[in-house]
Image (tube, rainbow, N blue to C red):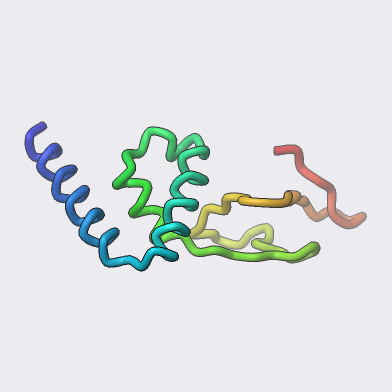
Length: 102
C-alpha cells in the first residue's frame, strides 16, 4: 500500500512539474480536455493529476460529415470521445450500411 501511495505522490509531482512548464493557452486546453474526460464514465474516478496525464496525451481529431473514423475488421488502438456534434456507427450489408444502436 505504501509503495502505491509513493507512486501516486511521484506521479502527482511529475504532473504538476509538467503543468507548470505549459503555456497559459495550452493549460486552458488541457483543463478543457480534463473536464471533458471527467464526464466519461471510465475516467470519472481519476484524480486531477491522472486526468491531466490523459488530457496531455489526447489527440484532437476533427471530422466532417461522411468521414470514416474506422472500418469493420480494422484493429483499433484508440478510443474516440465525441466532444461536439454526433456520429453514427454503421454496419455494412448487401444493401448499403445500416445504423447500429449504441
